[in-house]
Length: 373
Ligand SMILES: *Cc1c(COP(=O)(O)O)cnc(C)c1O
Image (cartoon, rainbow, N blue to C red):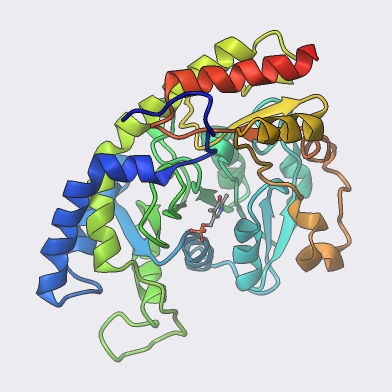
């Protein structure tokens, strides 16, 4: 693959990945389509068992999207109307929508200054008699302080649902994201560390009752066909997506290593500039779904990079409690000063496994040029 430098550097580029895996993906497509079996078949069953084995849980359940995985994961943990779920404000709105879909109320805790993840010191002050679960988001590819979160949850008899949408392949003390809480919820949105060719998601759990409940919820409330014991949903992962994701799972470790290669270049070359590079907490292997810096004069830097044909974006540009859907809670930025400070400084740089060394170097040189102007 020859990509000349001094051309545009995209923030993500799925076409390069396609060049690498096209034959195997097409083989999977050709295997599935002639069978006539397109939902709840052998590919999904095989993918579920392979994914559970990878993450280190007893079960995994294929779901139609990461949002639905969060919704069904929370519902299977018994979250319902009147309950409260503790989560973070600096996430994709889907995390919080999932709480709302259950009829529960999101309670926001602030994040740590260095890792962008849930500040565990502040959790207990938010627990009330209505709290049912804690929903940490492992942001940008790094696992939260999950052992502390699980310990607090056990002490107060709460469930833990992990939002692993950014952390396929990320570990803490050698254990994979999605294996710590009662349920782990993954998204296979195309640009995620491991993405489908469309939408997809997965729940992981080692609890047999939760496994059974999620399976029932994802397919119309049935345990046996046409026996709709509870109100369920139509939220299965398709056979075709499962077959193609099985191919991608085999590349996951290698792709995470490639992301770490890019991150190492950024780490080294951005040191000494007025930007804070990502801090990797002790015991963590960062999967670098995103490489997000905190930058002085962020908006000017963003424009400068775009003017120099370097992709970059702000993930996420608004805090969830201040978006229209949650303004009625009246929380705004109250009690979340760290997240409020970060949101005006964060910038995510080009990051994908096929990004070339020379492209990463060009990104850094351009940032260096901006600050020396
Ligand atoms: C992508 C994402 C989701 C939702 O996943 P979809 O597959 O797009 O529904 C949830 N939480 C976070 C943090 C995400 O980034």
